[in-house]
Each structure stands twice: as C-alpha cells, then as structure tokens.
Image (cartoon, rainbow, N blue to C red; front, side, top):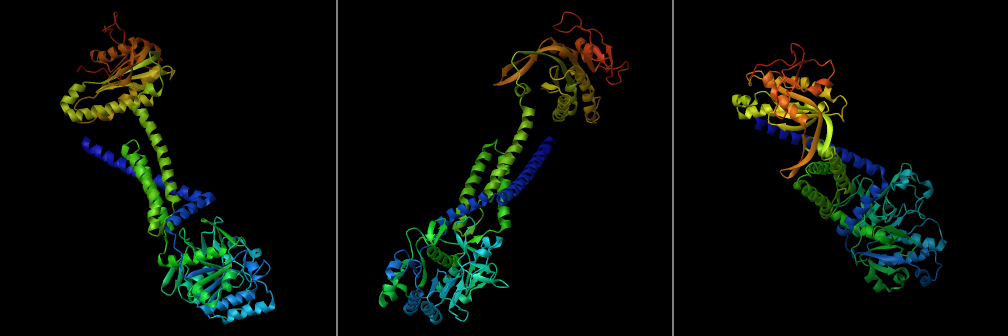
Length: 613
C-alpha cells in the first residue's frame, strides 16, 4: 500500500512539474513576443543573425550571363562631357549596339525624370521604341508624398517617366526600392503600390524584370499571387510584404564589368563577344549611388545585379520561412524543456541537458538554413533564457521550503555554539507503541507512527515551536522565550492541538484500542551546542530542564495521566489553564521528590486519567 502511494505521489509530482514547466514556457514566449514588439534592437539583432547565416549559406556565384556597364568618375572625361550626366544620345547608341550584339535585355539603374537636349531625347526615345530587346527603367519616388506606409517601403508615389512608353511593348517600368528595415539593404521589395494612380497600381522591382530577362522570358509575363511570383514554371516565394532577401555573391567572385566609355569604344566584334546573350545592367559605380548592405557599401547597380543574380537562385532553391505558428510553437517547446531541465539542475542530468539544449539551439539555425529553412533565432533563445530564469526562481522558492524542512534550524537561524537560553521543553511519546507495532505488524505500525510524528511536527511548527528531534514514536519540541513571550502558554496549547490532530488516527479500526499520547513539559534554562555526528554537525540541547521534561513524560504511565507539567512551567501558566497536583515522585538525577502537575480540570475532561498499560 505504501509503495503504491509513493508511485502515485511521484507520478503526480512529475505531472505537476510538466504543468509548471508549460506555464513558465508560455509566460516566457509571451514576454519574448512583447520584447520583440517593443524593443527595436531586438528585431535588429534578429536581422544581424540572419545576415550571418545568409553569409554562410546563401552566397551564390556570379552568373556569367550578367554584365555591368558602369559609370564612374573617369567616364565623363573619356566622353568629353560635363561630369553630371551622360548624354542620352550615348544611351541610345549603347542600346542599339547591345541589340545588334544579341544581348538578352537591358536594365537601366538610372532615373530619367526631366527632358534634356531635344535631339538627344529624341534619339533615346527612338532607340527605346525600336529596340527588339526588353528594356527596364526605374521610376523615381516623389519623396514629398511619403507617408508612414511609404516609409516602410510598401507604398510610394512615383514621378512620371520622361518618355511615353505606354505603346512600347518591350519597355518596362519598375522601381528600385530596397528592403532595408534597419537602413541596411539586405533584399528588395519585389512589388510595391504605385499611388500615383487611382486606384494604386502594382509596380515591380527592376531586379525582378532583370530576372525575367535572365531566364529568357518576357518581363510582362510575370504574375504575382500575393505569396510569390510566377514566371512560366518557376515560382519565386516572397515575404508578407513581397520582399525577397538578396543572395550576395560568393567571396572572390564578381560580374563581368566594363566601364561605360570603354564599352562604347569597343569595336563591333569585341562588343559582340562581350555582351552577346547577356543581361546588361547600366548604372553608377562611384559614390553617386551607394547602397549600404550587410556586406558593406556597394554601388547601386551592383546591388541590383546581385539581387537579379540571387533571384535566379531563390527561384530554384527557395528559402522557406517558418510561419508564426511554427515559430511560437518551437519557442514554447524549447521553453518547456528548458524549464523542466532547470527543475532538475540539482542533478547532473539537468545541467547536462541544459548544455545540450543550448548547443542544439546554437547549431539548429545553421542546419535549417543549410536546408533552406529560416526559423527566427532569437525567439527560441529568449524563451530558453527566460524559462531558465523563471524556473530558477521557482526552484529557488521550492528549495527554500525544502531547506526549512531539511536544513537544521540551528544552521538556518545562525545559533551560536554553547548557547544558553530560556525555553519550554515538551517531550511527546505515543502510548504503548511497541504493543501497537506487535498488533498491527511492522509495515502498518511504522506507517501509523510516521503519520503521527508528522502531524505532531506540523502542530509544533504552526504554534511557533521548533522540533528539536524526532524518534520513531515521539519527538522533542522547544518553545523559546526569545522568539515568543508567551512560550509557556504556547507549549500548553500545543498539547490539546496535538491530541485533536491525531484523533482520526485513534479512531482507525486497525489499531484496536484507545490511541493516546504521553506529554511531559518543563520550562527553564537550556543549553545547546553543535556536536559532530556521523560526519555532520547536529544541534543538541541539554540541562536540568531537558532532563526533567523527559522524566515527566516517562512518569505519565505511572501517574496514569496524559500530561504532566513541571513545577516551573506550572508556575508560568495563567490560572485559566486548569491543573491538579500529581503524586510527588523521585526521578533519576534529582535528589528531592518532584512535585508535578496534571494538566486538566478536576474531572480531567481533556486529559483523562488513563488505565495502566
């Protein structure tokens, strides 16, 4: 029966531990979400961690079919023009030569918002209209029309393109908005709302148009369904705002590059060999247009080229992003395990488990990113840390309670060795415990005695006393004057409370006779000291007061009284506590007879005279 009870208790304890761990994990995840929502640095740190993972797992080689024609500080002297812009008739010349060389397409990373020289404008407009190549142009934003949504990169008002290309099927307009939540361009918005129209019109990124050209498709065939782009049988997943992370170039690799004036100076054969079957991006490569990225500042046209290059890889090897439900669920699971392991840190397995879990959390993002899955990193880590913290606090409180039960009181209260103080000492013993065990058996008898001593100890602690020592069938309790001025009354009150507390045990049919307790108590000076015992320190009290209380408890059976008071404690108790003189008796160690008192009224209604036995 006892074994079954212990198994049930352990099962219930395990269930309670898991429930507590679940509650701690839920609080940790909630706190983590609130921290992430209210502390910008938290989200920025998540982005930095993503950058580190992307640098290890999302770098791609340069596509040989991409080329850059760059405008730098040397371009203008070479062309013999002022250093503010390239004449548009030169753009017309370059566009015609690229068409003749058999390029796949052209992406201008240059804004054309104002008319310039009429002759040059006419030449460029004609080249655009006559080009057999798909050509993409970015629209410049109207910064004065920004609102909160615009600043997030999702909605913008754009200026009109300088030329009317509405009837030119090969000309495509886009935008060049980078995805930069912390002012570092780490991706692109593939599409935004152009609020220059009513209703607003979707406007794709020029890198998306360049990707379509790189795949040999018409940019006009791109289709967005809210979750990603379709280009023939290719699918490009996007984030909730249509964003895609840029997959930057591998180290020591770069695109085929040619300076603008040098490209125009090439003869036709060299030009054809350089640009045939390539998508050509044209833009500034000097300080005029720099994009700050996690890989450092790069020219704007290089960022667009790397975005085009990365889109091709992203469509073939997409990076899946765990949904919010999966992220929260994984963080909750980590929190539950961390809280449960923390509750076991007093065992070696608990510390080892926490180290293993921390190692898994450290390695898991790399493993998932290698498998093309992005799971938010900080949410599980913060759930782990907060769960360990909260569970540690809970364990500290629980350990404090265990300390109250198992750590000796003299150690908790910092008692001095060889200390003498005024106190009341109470000896309690179960009547005829040997006969009880012989009657009901060892197991049942020990269970009854253990329950009894536990109940008696609880009563002592509830009344402000201290269990000095327990024996198999009784205990010694001390009530100190330094802790309670009414220490004598508390000792006397404790007797009645103990008798009522054990009455359910006395009524058990298993026992077979009237179940009772013997009490002996006395007040006076007691001394204590710390003694070594079996490799540990123990507090032991001694003195005449202790000896007399023990003799009084032993005398109960001879006096046939349940409670015997010593002369000193009898004098301290108020008149409201009934007592009657007992027969004087001689006690070992005392020369004179002891005048004890039986606690109770004349009829001993609470502490009956007991039959011998």
